[in-house]
Length: 551
Image 1 (tube, rainbow, N blue to C red):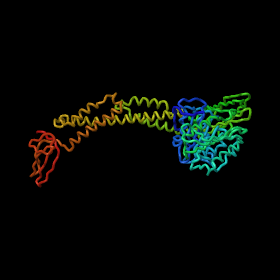
Image 2: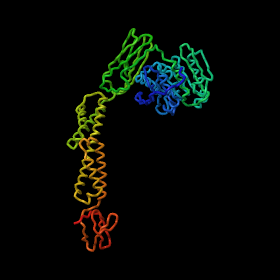
Image 3: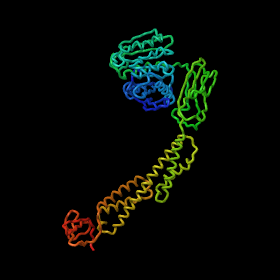
Image 4: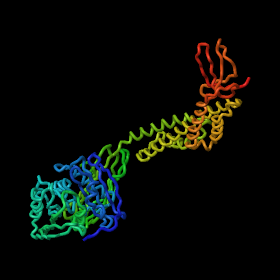
């Protein structure tokens, strides 16, 4: 019996699976070191709650590296579980299949715990899930509107954990004890044991009553723990009791086992694929008698066997139709016991992927034409990669969805890179031409060429006179454009409104001219950038910033 928790070592992931055409989510915890045939614990949370709240409360995931099991916390579709139909029962079934496919869990040691409405779901499904779930561990909840013990085909392994002080599923209000005892009566357990002052875990601050019914003619056992304290919330104090109960149980090892190596739930298939359905069946205490493979309810392959304890069977599925399909395998042993295994896969329509590739090819070709010429020499490396893809995939007959999707993504990425490089080069050549024009225009003007803004522009232009190799770096091109724009704008702001003229008087009758510096001082012999003022005969004054050169 596990009595303590050691190191916390695990991997956590959010996982989406397809359940009858709907995406459903779960949070999966696996031990840091995986091995085959580990048990699986499924957990369903309460109403208006979520896996994050549940796992933060029950902390079952902290046990997995020590106890070596996988735990998955399922997420409801909305705020409630389907406690009247089969929607969430199918979710649980698909979860088992997914975990078997991904982690090769032991399908004979699958357990199901829940809280509140998540426990109601357990009781609603319990009779239909006895061939898939080895032990049930609901907490703080029952399906009070149903009597599921009457529908159980065989004895159940069940532990209910509750609190005398639960204020939602009241102990007396819902007759919690009587409800659980009905399972023990149905399974005809003659032995009853009550352990008062039982502490569910060493660190628990309270005790309670542990009741156990067992000894029925067909096996199974029923336990119930009622805590003296606590309330209506997931509690980590229950995790050891839950695990120590569940790990005692396994489904009938005499029932045949089935594993499906192909197709997998993680691979993607199209209607062009030929899918090899590959299964392995075994019977531990006898031999296999009959194997059958169904697709969407139709029998596709049958194999009769004699004195065969295990067998590998294949069925070639040619040109599957687009859509969702369920593959079901049934194994029957020499005692007439059967095991079923189902896996649902989706056949994807390849046409949208081909259309996306063709659109990417068209865009790439257009851009290749637009980047011909010496001015785009710095695009050569990218253009070569794109041309290789065009040569390979233009008119492709590939039916591999992964190959086509990867080609589309790579081509799209390269086209984006080429477009960026082209735009950067265009802007670089434009801005350098503008800078060269300004520098050339004022090179022989001693007043302007000595301006600080002009000299900084010259320095920047020389610095950003990029080599062909440097032009292959988009960051260098972008920096050159950005900085040259700054220096050009600085120069233009300093010279805005300036006209070149020689010092002269106004031709206007009665007007006279004088000059002041930019800071407002009147000067008799202006030169360089100054403000020219014309005093008109009517008393008004007009001004202009000018560059004055001596005649």
